[in-house]
Amino acid sequence: MTYSDWLRVDRLPHIYCAGCGNGTVINCTLNAVDRMGWKKEETVFVSGIGCSSRAPGYIVTDSLHTTHGRALAFATGIKMANPELHVVVFTGDGDLAAIGGNHFIHSCRRNIDLTVVCMNNQIYGMTGGQGSPTTPRGALSTTTPYGSQEPAFDLCELASAAGANFVSRWTSYHVKELTRSIHQGLGVPGFSFIEALVQCPTNYGRRNKFRQVMDQVEYFKTHGILVQKAHRLRDEGLPIPADAILLGDMVRRDRPAMGVKR
Image (cartoon, rainbow, N blue to C red; front, side, top):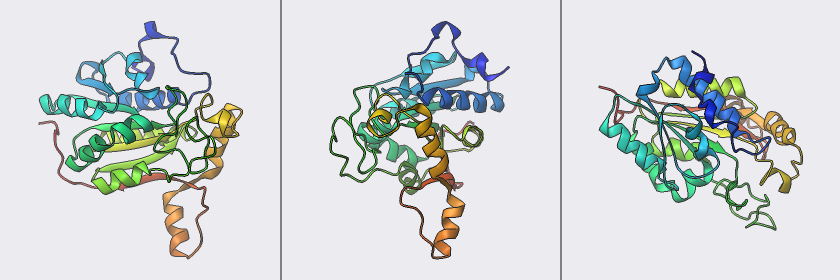
């Protein structure tokens, strides 16, 4: 079996915009799931509302496409009712960190045995390009036409502080690393959070000088810096570029988890 065996071919072609990074993350996730050797009837995908949350509709397993921000609440119910199931959550930065922020914090605190893959396009892509909790300071959106004046959430820092057992960040450029990280997160008991920065050429890129799809992918490539290197720079008293994107595995701990398979 390969990752393509997990796709609902009858639902294709997908609805994503040309150049969207979400398809890359779906492929990485299904590759990682396939490597786990899981059975389709023992695996459930859950999502909320948003571009990223359409992903479970293209996967052959049972799935729940839930209300905005509530994916983790539904996923918690599934896992508590049947710990034998493997539960994977697809979410976006608006779905997870805005209306779903409280569920996110407490799911990390409870350390529920879920794997959460967040496709962070730094904007509300599906509903018209409004600024989201992760929109960078100075970035343009329909609700920040003069540039965002708010600091952005660091989702990995939030998950780490709230108690998740595994936390990692990569981008749609770092396909191999992202697949490896998701695979690792799937095998960690407790709450695993993998953030994947993705390009949104329709609503983010065209407003923020990423006219071509590859412009933002190239930005991920040139501005990414491994967290280990960032730590070395700090230890040596050297500055970390202000626009650097910290990448890699941020946390791996062994706190007691809820909902672990019996």
